Length: 477
Ligand code: 4AD
Ligand code: MG
Image (cartoon, rainbow, N blue to C red; front, top):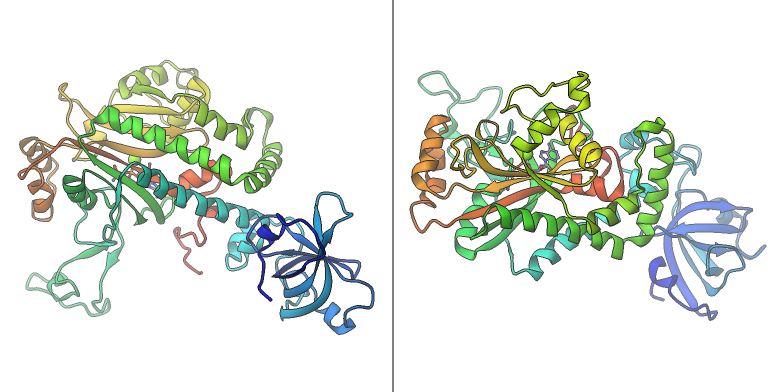
């Protein structure tokens, strides 16, 4: 007999037809009612064992966490909240689970505790729901771009340069770190390393994907990204996934249009296709809200926040306009910000971004035209000589979810900036050549995939939206 997934089984009319279900026991009550989940949905199916129909020794092995295989008839359920149940005819234990030592008891566990058992946390309702939503969002990302004729480019994970300057990098080497070969000056001789040069894990696929945008026009990359900063926050990982579209013939306004349409599409997709999981996560988030002080609670529920993003235009304003709002804001005047806003050109901190989004505008915000000193060398320089055509999308509860810009497509201007910042020209030669041979105006941005998943699932810590989080001091699983 062929196994049926619980998700599909719940769609069937109960006609006493034989079914085979396999999954993990969530609870077993009164030696009779087994609640089984197989991860195809957040919902469980109840399998009912008739008295004395199953061997006593087999019944003893039905414990929370055990893996079982159940054959039976699909019948209407008299119990509330479930249309159907299985009347068990035979039952096999596929994997025993010693209830005495199984860490996942059927009760509430803290997310911190679950991080310590990352190999088992997938079996909780919360992580099942988060990972199904994560899958749906990855699928929707590709669907969005495919519908618009963008091409998915796989950019390399090992790179030869730190040209992006996005943060500290992880070294990739096969040299013996205890006894590395040295050159005449006594420095490590990377000429003898695997690639004949120093290499690192990528901090962004942007520079490489730009080369393909200069040929295929509309492209994107979606892959793992690594940053070796020591940031222990609820929004930073050392290994995260980033989606980076890069488009020829798009200016900064086209770029903002695309970013807004993209985020709206993803939120709408979740509302359309993840309703069971979102309902669960919505309730979970509401319970978490109740543990916070009244003035720090969200005014909108998780599902309402998703609808809000879909239905409202994002607020667009320049860095300079935002700077003025922040400088004159109550928390700035009352010195409530940790970093006070005083001089134009200062980088905005997460507290400022969240003030703009959550208190001032009460909607997603796109800031653009940032001071050039606080942004990357490749961003297009504006006529004023002070700002670049950068844009950041700021979301409630998250802060920066997207960072991007129009790119400097003029060879002379780009070279000048590379020289001013003393960047290694020998590593950037190919990037500069793009501006020499058929350069085109172009733009792009990066969406942090885990920050998106945080927003869509309402999970407050980024470590709980990726299967195995990598952060300072942690790479156990
Ligand atoms: O603003 P960032 O550093 O931009 C870039 O890397 C550009 N190359 C993107 C581009 O224009 N193609 O990063 C982009 C986004 C951020 O807005 C944030 O959502 C996410 O990546 N991000 C992180 N997410 C998790 N952990 C980290 N340490 C992150 N650093 C950035
Ligand atoms: Mg950024």
